[in-house]
Image 1 (cartoon, rainbow over the protein chains, first blue to last red):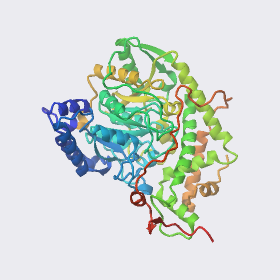
Image 2 (tube, chains in turn blue, green):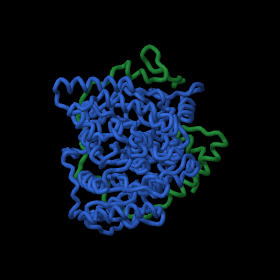
Image 3 (cartoon, helix red, strand yellow):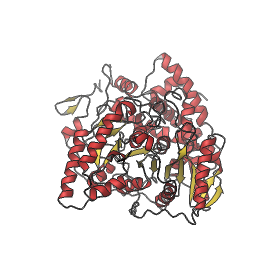
Image 4 (spheres, rainbow over the protein chains, first blue to last red):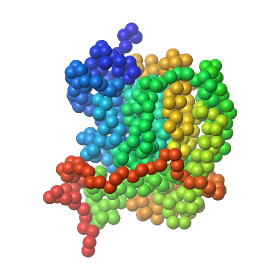
Length: 490
Length: 89
């Protein structure tokens, strides 16, 4: 392609073009909206597209810029938002029948921040229902497809976000990650995705799945774009009691690509038999490349990794069963039509409003918290969580960050795992530990397998070490000459 | 393992048809078998992060979205109130 279309460019490049008046936000937004119109029949990434509102917002930003106002780097950049993040006046469905017609009366904290920055919201992105899933197939509305191969899933639960970014249907996007929901779809769709340190991004306005694990995070086509978006959304919020009391640097501005002297740990448990050989090789190759650039490779061990998935599903489902008790058909959301009394209204509403996977998680959560089973499951899971945290802390005395595969294999076919929950849950085996320990984790593309599907590598650091993750990711990105999305952006 | 699907469904305020119930019972048994794989650990330490303490906000009244906007999401509204089935005999 001789000339690049605006929708194909990175936020970094577009931000500079907007600042230099080489294009307007309205032109850019039109380009992305046209792309959405063109690709949606095939990809189905969006639950809701807000074309008119986006163009209006873009024009308003252009006017401000023309008037000489000082602008945020994200001003005028069109973004997609996962449909579990509340957007005032724009319906927020969580891809569930339960919230099919829910229009939030307030903005999530991250939306307040993005609106203040002048970012343009394109619409709401598809996901697994209530963020429970690894393929976006549990959405009540539609199945999103992987832009690299439309027979395959984009991953999940932020599958709409990943597919939209990879296909050029958004310059960047927000997702949410409870057990891998940003990193796994980023890996499957060949983009960059960050699950930030727990407590660095406010959860106010994020529809709760598992409150102690949920975190909103940025997804983009370059490391710099993800750093820009992360800088825009992190920070203290009084509405989230778990929100950390600290100041954050401008991650994009201070981004360097120098890995000299950094110690990169390779946890042997993450390169085991369950990981596809091609994935292991790609990540090992990346490690060697970083070593050539001056990093030191260290072998480390995280022995309790095997227990992480059990602990995760217990803790996440326990919290979900409690969080989702609010959907009772009374104040908002779906309400069943015919019922004899209040209890029947609850039961019919919930049985008709929730899909099968959500029901399984609620039932599992109810089981592990129920009288007589609490000690055997929930308490044990919390002890395991503590052990996993301690093992990470121990590992970080020997290295500055960890490098692992993001997912054991590349994207699978639609329908392949829908009837096998255990196989579906195994997708999260390398990502859940990060949520359990509250750490930042990032997926970066590191090549393609023989099916030409993208492979992702995961960088994990101590709490609030996002700068280090960006630094290593950027060094890798520079060494490969940028991540290759030429097939999905064409 | 003793999975009483009917009892769990009741606690969860969910109902299942007999066919669904049979399917769920099988699936739940597999999932529970998976999550049962946990070590016996003696807990020491606590799951709090002393370097990053939490802070509650002040208990202050702030202006919230207006009534019309809130009621817009209610399944059934009458005279500015949410309608629910009779709850007292």
